[in-house]
Length: 190
Image (cartoon, rainbow, N blue to C red; front, side, top):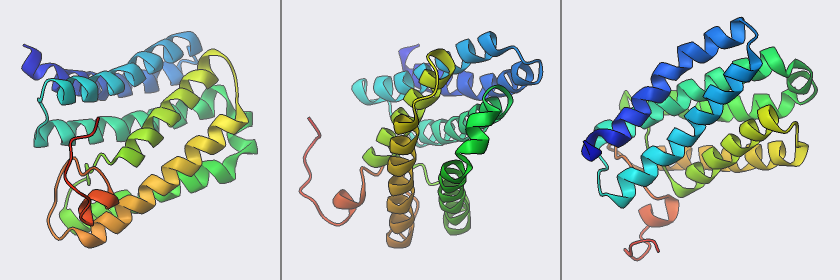
C-alpha cells in the first residue's frame, strides 16, 4: 500500500481540482481554502514519501506535474474569485509568473511531447513558496513580500528548466538542476 501512496496523493490533488473550481463558483471560500491547503500539503507529502521510501517513478513524476499544473490553475481561479483586488493590483507579478510557467510548459510539450517533470530543487523551492503564499493568503491574509519572493523564485526555476530543455535531448524525470546536469560531483543530497 505504501508503494502507491505518493501516486494516490497526486491523484487526490488531480481530483481536488474540479471540486475546487466548483467551490470557487459557489463562492464557498472557507471550504475552498480548506481543500486548497489540504491539496498543497499533499503536494509536499507525495514527494517526501516518494524520496524517503525510494518510490520515485516516471508515472509518479508525471502525475505530480499534472497535479501541480491543475492546482496552480485552480488556485489562480480561487484568487480571482476571492481576492480579485489583490490579483488586479499585482497583475504584472501574476502575468510574469504564469507567462514563465506557460513558456516552459509549452517548450516541454514541443520538445518532448510531455510535461518536463524535471522537479529541480529550484522549482521545488518555488512550489513550496507559492504554496506558502497561497495558504497564507487564504488563511491569514495578503503578504506582498511573500508574493514577490515566490514569483522571483518561480521565474528563476522556469528559466532553469528552459535551459535544461535546451541541454537534455531526451526526456528525464527528477533532474536535480542545472548544476548536476553540467557535471557536478554525484553525491546524494544531505
